[in-house]
Amino acid sequence: MRSIDEISKTNPEKPLTKEVNGKEYYRCPIHTHQIKVGENLSDLMRQYVLPYFQEGDVVYISEKIVSLCQKDIIPKENVKISGLAKFLSRFASTNDGAGIGVHNVYKMQVTIMLCGKPKVMYAALAAGVGKIFGKKGVFYEITGPQVAGLDGFYSTYFEDYKNFGILSPKNPDKAVAKVEEETGIHCCVADINDFGGEVLAISPKSSMDKPLLQALLKDNPAGNGHEMTPFVLMREKKAE
Image (cartoon, rainbow, N blue to C red; front, top):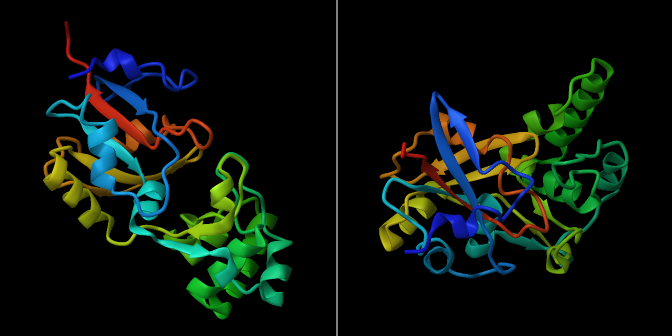
């Protein structure tokens, strides 16, 4: 088993430890190759995480990686841009620090495909009213987590990702349960960015519950882009 010190400086701009409810925890991002569509998630966990894993640890898995492994994508060539998508995307706010939002016309079109025109038009109108009163995020509150979690269609860091959209993973509970069963690694799936996020699923034998995991991941220890650290090993720091 390798030492946790080997991965302790992967993302130096993020603090390695975090205190929650009077206990201190390591949060160690694990660097990987650029993961492609259709790779096996359990094999990735064996390759990159298992050498460091100890019983009691819990490993964060980016929801984007689960989606890539499950092939939950939509190719760009399958998205026919409508006039409504072009119109609405011009008025959408940018999401600095949280990735590219529905001001990307392809993302707006997929939103229409997922939610239907009436709901998207209502969400856009409500978001406009929200802006007047200084409230952000109204559009995503109405269109829901599938839209908030939509990724891809741009290539800030990874050229491949400009060619398809990455949808939210199907059945994340089953995904983490399968990883735990096949590898013995306790894990969670979460949609996290620099503005926070949500833990979507936790494997059955995890020693950490959702409130603890939310607190440990709140400041996005994995980063959002070039870091290529889609897994974060979390471990309670024991007194020496």
